[in-house]
Amino acid sequence: MEKKIERSYEIAKDKYAQLDIDTNKVLEQLEKVSISLHCWQGDDVAGFETPDAELSGGGIQVTGNYPGRARTVAELRQDAEKAFSLIPGKHRFNLHAIYGEFGGKFVDRDEISPDHFKGWIDWANSLGIKLDFNPTCFSHPKANDGFTLSSKDKGIRDFWIEHVQRTREIAAFMGKELGSPAINNIWIPDGMKDIPADRLTHRKLLKESLDTIFRKSFPAFEMKDALESKLFGIGSESFVVGSHEFYLSYAVKNKKIVCFDLGHFHPTESIADKISSTLLFVDELLLHVSRGVRWDSDHTVILNDDVKAVAEEIVRADSLDRVHIALDFFDATLNRVGAWVLGTRATLKALLLALLEPRDMLKSAEEKGDFFERLALFEELKTMPFGAVWDYYCMKNNMPVGTSLIDEIHNYEKDVLSKRN
Ligand code: RNT
Ligand code: ZN
Image 1: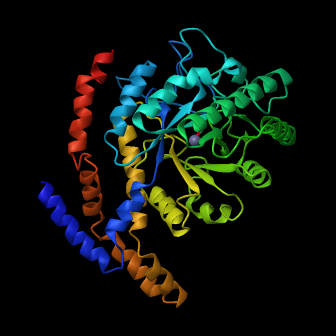
Image 2: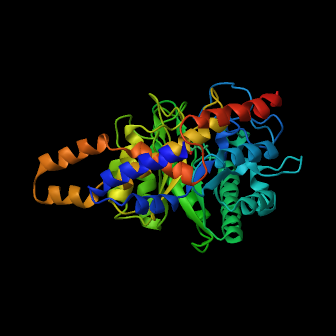
Image 3: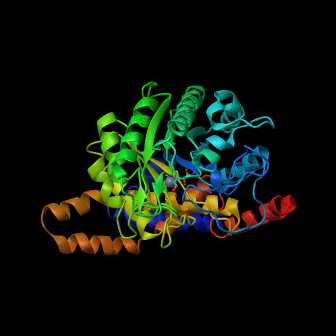
């Protein structure tokens, strides 16, 4: 088997060399990419605040009841470790505030502290991975009426301001301890089901809340702030306070990271096209790689045209160091560890495809106005032996190649997940 993979790789290497692509160099570049795996795929966005915690409100939804959900911190870590063991490269883990270790007592969102995340930091250290973070402004009684940081009720607003401020402290602590800045990504559900009479007041309030939250600054080597917009959610169909224009403007003015979730735009709107535009005005971007099917349904990421286009734009804009790639999907209808692995591997495959593009040839065809040549090259790329390069990369990293991945997931299900109920 190994010999066959190597032989196929040698043939592929020659073919790419004809396009002036050095596949060995490309694999070195790919190896440096760290993707942030979202903790919430492992337990359907439930978290550990109470033993029976579950996702509620917030315009986001999990469907399905596939057995084997992680119910404890230990189970979630075990599952994440399994996922990491099947994904080539060194990646990150993205925690939400509700995933702290609260020691069996109820700790409200305005009371969380770095102490609740020390165990996660130790765990990350033991695996040699880095962490990212998120405030959790949903699944809480104080988010039930659909407003948090932009609520007209000052008490509610102050509660969430305190929460987000604490998440920034925690993120900074994580970043400092692990030697890599944790991105703290703010997404709030605030919005209305039906036509609002006054959009402006909520947006002014959100702006004020953010200004208060960001009054304290942290060194960029400890933590960075990101802002995630949304077009609409279930229950916020007519109005979302934190829209794309709102956060983009805020980020440009205040030097924050903009987060693009692939499910948060009009269904035919291209996120890929936004990368080169926004990178001229913000220093860094964060992506939530997701797959919306008809709506922001958070299906498991696969190697589809949207993900490929995003990867191409990152690489073509030479911005792998300025675009942070995180995943965001939660599907409870299939093996959750398998979903993590598929989504991450699909994202890596998209990046590999993009890195295997003959950028200089394409650009020179474009510059001389030979659009036939440019199109012909794009067509040629579609039948290039990229799979052989991917298989070789997996093999070299001691990761399952081809359908052996399915066996790995099945075995884990049999040995671990199926014993949980
Ligand atoms: C919601 C946003 C947000 C969440 C996570 C759980 O629409 O995409 O990123 O999915 O924070
Ligand atoms: Zn998201």
